[in-house]
Length: 250
Image (tube, rainbow, N blue to C red; front, top):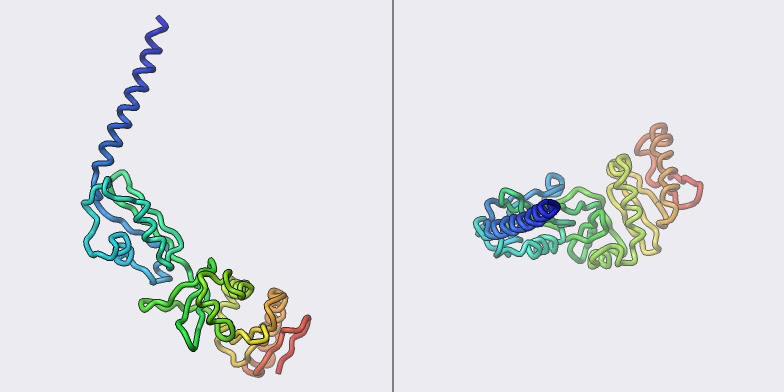
């Protein structure tokens, strides 16, 4: 009497395994019904569109892979073709239950643009990666000029250059809506100091070195919120916050 339940369990497991095998065989023989591409950040960073991604997975050829058997596709290889693009932060490719090939792409967000007078410009992304400029789209971000731009632009990442501390300043400005709207440019000087150029007002800001960034912006906040409204937005040509606990206006 006790044998039947055991036999039933064994047969049930065997049947289940056979069903899995049958499903896998059927899935392997399915073809790509449709390629569905989703690009995150595309509306704000128009560096890459669906046609570009389509070109990446077909090695630049115009024909679609729709109708191709999944047995003939190496999904991981397709994923790597997309990930190798410098504008792409991450990519994921998989098929859904309907037989569609799903391609999800996350684009890098530029936070600053390196401006060179004797070389091509480049973007610094929010993860520190260096991106080439694009003929398709120009991102309105903080400009970086002056000493060191050539070294930064030729690096894979700002962290692989001698100017990784500059990234702290870029992030501080980019993360704050007020300073992001106020500061247009960071000019790096030969002595290691930086100069900030505002978007609207005519005075430039002698920021000093890249240390004590938060405290310097706290003093700049006093200048913008208390001093300029009383004296006039274009009353000064220069403001200096490089020295501790001081605001020098000229």
